[in-house]
Image (cartoon, rainbow, N blue to C red; front, side, top):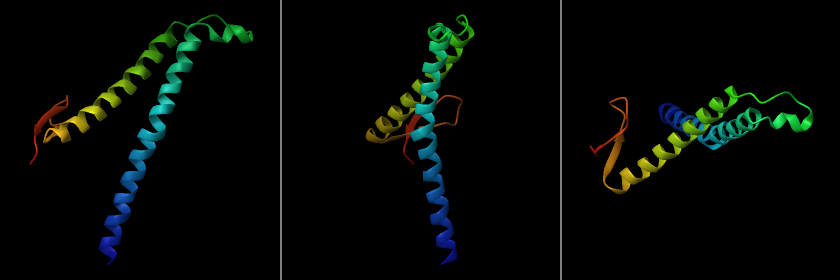
Length: 100
């Protein structure tokens, strides 16, 4: 009984972690990208802030690239399941392999 409870709690913890990362983490990362892009364009000048900071444009682009990569991986995961394949990360890049 204790072993089953431990497995169930571990599974619940994994689901909670993934939901926090994807459900809250990606929107936070996206909003950070929006904020960095606005700061790079001098959005703070309207409130009496300083000059534009071009380095924040790179930070915004990096945030958007990570969010876009996560969305693309999610779509690839769903498509792979529909085609009878699975997404493998044996190499550095994800590949489609036959289900085992």
